[in-house]
Image: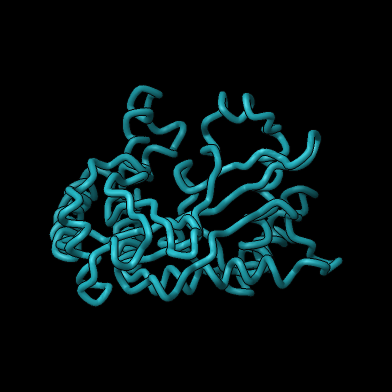
Length: 286
C-alpha cells in the first residue's frame, strides 16, 4: 500500500523509481492457485471453483497486496471478476503494520513535523477496512446508487460516462467479492488511449466531474484512484465522451457536510481573492 501511494506521487521520486513501483498497483507477484482455491472452498461452502462457476481461470488478471482477481464465467454466461483474499493475509497485515509503525517511529525522530503518526493511522484504517469485502461491496453500491439517483437532476447532473461494476452478492462473502467484468484501458496508458480514439481532455473532465460529485455533493468517495483502479472505455460514436470505469472500492472516505461547505467556500474565496471568505471557510472546516 505504501508503494502504491508513492507510485502516484509524481514529484516524489524520479520516473525510473515510480515506474517500477507502479507494478504494485496490480502486478504484485501472485499466489499459487492452490492457495486461492483453498480460500474459495472455505468461503463457498466447500465447493470447488469449477462447481460454482461454469469457468474459472487459474491465472490471475491482477494481483495486489491483500488479494488477487481472477476472471470467471457464471453458468448464465456472464463474465465476472472474482477478487479473492489470500488465506493468511490477516496475520501478514498485522505483522506488516507493526513493522511500519516502528519504521515511522524512527522517521519521526528525523522529520518530526511530517505527520507520520497521522499517515500511519490512515494507512492502518484503510488496510484493515479492506480485509472485509462485504464493506467494500456496500460502499460500491452506495456510490453507484448516488450517481444513478442524480440522473435527471438539473441541479446536480452527474457525468454521463461513468460506470461501476455490479456486485453479485450470491457469489460474494467477507473474503470473496464477485462483480461484473469490466473491459477498458488503464487511465495512465496514454498511447493505448490515443490508439483507441479516446480524447484525453474529455477523459480528464469526466474524472474531475465524477470526483467533484463524490466529494462535494455526495460526501462519499473512491479514495484509491491509482491507474490500476481507473479504466477508460472509448466513446460509442466519434466525438462522444469516453466512459470512465471505477474499480476496487476497498479504500473509500467520507466528507462531512460542514467540511464540504467549508471546502467550497475556501475554493470560491481563493478564486475571487476574498481573504475574508477564506478565513471564514477555514474556521468552518476547523
